Image (cartoon, rainbow, N blue to C red; front, top):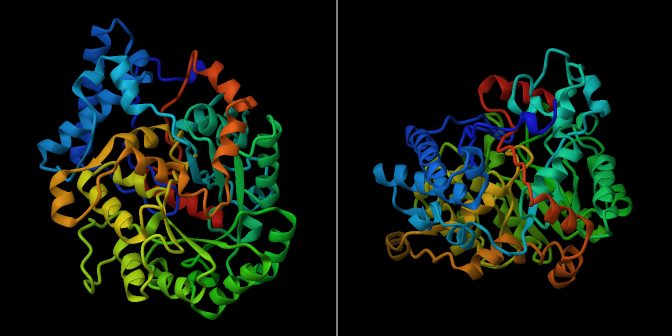
Length: 490
């Protein structure tokens, strides 16, 4: 069986993937009836428009017109249900006109994705996972050619570095990615720092381009992690330390301004690593929930003005409906981050950055939620401090997230009522990559020069002659898969 044999020949998978998939850090939330109707309408449009263009449905959906028509279908379903605070700014003619569709869903922005993941299918961590725990068994991605090994865990090959490189660098417009980590004990890491460095070298050897950067995972409330920071900084050329404040021994987390958190920040400061990336929002569950909130962010940002605090997921909570920020309202989610900034007088475009991994992917379902979330982050964190991230490989290729953000707009009604900004082309370029280049120390002109001629670019140009995206998502999609996934962390 070849890879092409495993593709969606009948065109039943949509290029803009609205489903219940999570990144494994939060329990999957089923999509609404509104989203179901949007998906159904998108398939109806694909059937109609592919016939008009003399194409198979698969051929149509792989094209720019397929992405544009899917976004139009999502607009129709949202408008029918009165969700008009945000929308995908796509012209009707783009469903049939290639030039119009390309102008809207394609683009030449520098795209720097600051959150990516994959799994080492041969790592020692597998020996500590019970054989009965098969997080990806029966899921679509388990059907990839690399997984047809006969081994009961062979499907993990489908989440390996080779699949990661294809999904990120061939099937999407991503230029650079930061490889991050999942919450786990050191011995149970599905990807170790050694694995991450190996993948970075593979990508670099493609022609010497600096396309992949890596984090160093540290939880200062775990034995040995503080001391391990020295090795990460000195031996592995990390770009940031990544921590999970809700994670810790016995399920008890910490705040960044607690003794372990301050010790971590001070150690990073001494080691010359200025970026502290912290998971906030997307709570793991009720235990230590308060540590998933962001009341501590403004405190440490004020304490350490020379350090950068990159708030991964922007403190977003999937089950909450975002609203206009009201000082003192006590609302959960993104408002806990904004309240902390306001309380500690940390202004826009200071040393706190809001990252969109999983957050934007979830917001794509609901334009009003998206308008409030993005509007607030751009207003209070600053237009230069919102960072692009996708949390892929869990959501498959991030191309659909890119295409959706290229076309998303906050309605004029919401802009006037709540003081949100219009999402201009210039602002999109900032969010897609220019903003992240500052804390991560990337010279965009240099990177553009490298990536315009390197091996990845040449391979991608050849690949685009006959692209074969699979339009799959890989993370857990229901409670059973999610609970199995949690066993990875020990």
